[in-house]
Length: 149
Image 1 (cartoon, rainbow, N blue to C red):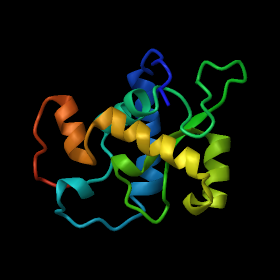
Image 2 (cartoon, one colour; image 1 turned 180 degrees about the vertical axis):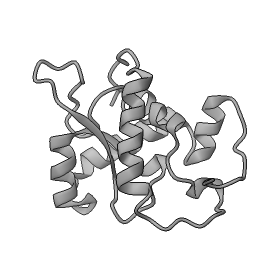
Image 3 (spheres, rainbow, N blue to C red; image 1 turned 30 degrees about the vertical axis):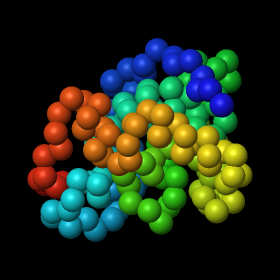
Image 4 (cartoon, rainbow, N blue to C red; image 1 turned 90 degrees about the vertical axis):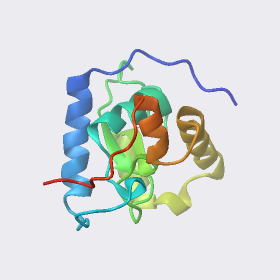
Protein backbone atom coordinates (compact mmCIF):
# COMPACT_ATOMS: atom_id res chain seq x y z
CA UNK A 1 0.00 0.00 0.00
CA UNK A 2 1.17 3.50 -0.80
CA UNK A 3 1.74 6.19 1.84
CA UNK A 4 -0.59 9.18 1.82
CA UNK A 5 0.90 12.38 0.44
CA UNK A 6 2.67 14.49 3.05
CA UNK A 7 0.95 17.47 4.61
CA UNK A 8 2.83 20.65 5.46
CA UNK A 9 5.10 20.06 8.48
CA UNK A 10 3.62 20.98 11.84
CA UNK A 11 5.18 24.02 13.49
CA UNK A 12 8.18 23.74 15.78
CA UNK A 13 6.26 25.24 18.76
CA UNK A 14 3.51 22.62 18.29
CA UNK A 15 6.11 19.84 18.09
CA UNK A 16 7.79 21.22 21.23
CA UNK A 17 4.48 20.98 23.15
CA UNK A 18 4.13 17.36 22.00
CA UNK A 19 7.71 16.62 23.06
CA UNK A 20 7.44 18.22 26.51
CA UNK A 21 4.21 16.38 27.30
CA UNK A 22 5.66 13.03 26.11
CA UNK A 23 8.91 13.64 28.01
CA UNK A 24 7.00 14.39 31.22
CA UNK A 25 4.63 11.40 30.93
CA UNK A 26 6.86 8.69 29.47
CA UNK A 27 10.54 9.57 29.91
CA UNK A 28 10.94 11.27 33.28
CA UNK A 29 8.80 8.64 34.99
CA UNK A 30 11.34 5.93 34.12
CA UNK A 31 14.73 5.40 35.69
CA UNK A 32 17.20 5.71 32.84
CA UNK A 33 20.89 4.90 33.27
CA UNK A 34 23.31 7.82 33.03
CA UNK A 35 24.86 6.26 29.94
CA UNK A 36 23.20 4.00 27.42
CA UNK A 37 23.78 3.01 23.78
CA UNK A 38 22.20 5.30 21.14
CA UNK A 39 19.36 2.88 20.32
CA UNK A 40 18.17 3.13 23.94
CA UNK A 41 18.21 6.94 24.18
CA UNK A 42 14.80 8.46 24.89
CA UNK A 43 12.96 10.30 22.14
CA UNK A 44 14.63 13.65 21.39
CA UNK A 45 13.01 16.88 20.24
CA UNK A 46 14.53 16.40 16.75
CA UNK A 47 12.95 12.96 16.56
CA UNK A 48 9.49 14.36 17.28
CA UNK A 49 9.65 16.04 13.87
CA UNK A 50 10.67 12.74 12.33
CA UNK A 51 7.78 10.85 13.97
CA UNK A 52 5.17 13.52 13.20
CA UNK A 53 6.24 14.74 9.74
CA UNK A 54 8.17 11.89 8.12
CA UNK A 55 6.84 8.68 9.66
CA UNK A 56 3.15 9.53 10.05
CA UNK A 57 3.04 12.45 7.59
CA UNK A 58 1.18 14.74 10.00
CA UNK A 59 -1.68 12.26 10.38
CA UNK A 60 -2.89 10.14 13.30
CA UNK A 61 -1.05 6.81 13.17
CA UNK A 62 -4.27 4.95 14.05
CA UNK A 63 -7.19 6.85 12.48
CA UNK A 64 -5.46 8.88 9.76
CA UNK A 65 -7.07 12.14 10.96
CA UNK A 66 -5.14 15.36 10.31
CA UNK A 67 -4.74 18.28 12.73
CA UNK A 68 -6.58 20.42 10.15
CA UNK A 69 -9.62 18.10 10.19
CA UNK A 70 -12.92 20.00 10.68
CA UNK A 71 -13.50 18.09 13.95
CA UNK A 72 -10.36 19.84 15.34
CA UNK A 73 -8.89 16.76 17.05
CA UNK A 74 -6.20 17.19 19.68
CA UNK A 75 -3.00 15.20 19.22
CA UNK A 76 -0.30 13.69 21.41
CA UNK A 77 2.60 11.29 21.25
CA UNK A 78 2.05 7.90 22.85
CA UNK A 79 4.06 4.69 23.10
CA UNK A 80 3.24 1.94 20.63
CA UNK A 81 4.03 -0.54 23.40
CA UNK A 82 3.68 0.83 26.95
CA UNK A 83 6.17 -1.80 28.19
CA UNK A 84 8.78 -0.69 25.66
CA UNK A 85 11.29 2.14 26.01
CA UNK A 86 10.33 5.74 25.07
CA UNK A 87 12.33 5.69 21.82
CA UNK A 88 11.71 6.77 18.22
CA UNK A 89 10.49 3.38 16.93
CA UNK A 90 8.08 3.00 19.86
CA UNK A 91 6.33 6.38 19.51
CA UNK A 92 3.05 7.11 17.75
CA UNK A 93 1.54 10.46 16.71
CA UNK A 94 -2.16 10.04 17.50
CA UNK A 95 -5.33 11.87 18.50
CA UNK A 96 -6.10 11.96 22.22
CA UNK A 97 -9.09 9.67 21.59
CA UNK A 98 -6.98 7.12 19.67
CA UNK A 99 -4.29 7.26 22.38
CA UNK A 100 -6.83 6.57 25.15
CA UNK A 101 -8.28 3.62 23.26
CA UNK A 102 -4.80 2.29 22.40
CA UNK A 103 -3.66 2.51 26.04
CA UNK A 104 -6.81 0.72 27.20
CA UNK A 105 -6.52 -2.13 24.68
CA UNK A 106 -2.75 -2.37 24.38
CA UNK A 107 -0.51 -3.20 21.47
CA UNK A 108 -1.50 -6.90 21.54
CA UNK A 109 -5.08 -5.99 20.57
CA UNK A 110 -3.98 -3.85 17.60
CA UNK A 111 -5.33 -5.26 14.31
CA UNK A 112 -2.50 -6.92 12.33
CA UNK A 113 -3.15 -4.74 9.26
CA UNK A 114 -2.76 -1.57 11.35
CA UNK A 115 0.44 -2.88 12.94
CA UNK A 116 1.85 -3.68 9.48
CA UNK A 117 0.93 -0.17 8.29
CA UNK A 118 2.69 1.42 11.29
CA UNK A 119 5.78 -0.78 10.90
CA UNK A 120 5.80 0.03 7.18
CA UNK A 121 5.59 3.77 7.89
CA UNK A 122 8.66 3.56 10.14
CA UNK A 123 10.57 1.43 7.62
CA UNK A 124 9.69 3.75 4.74
CA UNK A 125 10.58 6.95 6.61
CA UNK A 126 13.74 5.75 8.33
CA UNK A 127 15.08 3.18 5.91
CA UNK A 128 16.76 1.49 8.87
CA UNK A 129 15.69 0.76 12.42
CA UNK A 130 16.20 2.91 15.45
CA UNK A 131 18.21 6.01 16.11
CA UNK A 132 20.75 5.31 13.39
CA UNK A 133 18.08 6.23 10.83
CA UNK A 134 17.27 9.50 12.55
CA UNK A 135 20.96 10.47 12.80
CA UNK A 136 21.38 9.75 9.10
CA UNK A 137 18.28 11.82 8.31
CA UNK A 138 19.67 14.78 10.27
CA UNK A 139 22.92 14.43 8.36
CA UNK A 140 25.03 13.83 11.43
CA UNK A 141 26.43 11.05 13.52
CA UNK A 142 24.94 10.04 16.84
CA UNK A 143 27.08 11.19 19.74
CA UNK A 144 27.51 8.59 22.48
CA UNK A 145 26.78 10.80 25.47
CA UNK A 146 23.47 9.42 26.75
CA UNK A 147 20.82 11.59 28.35
CA UNK A 148 22.42 14.50 30.19
CA UNK A 149 21.02 16.27 33.23
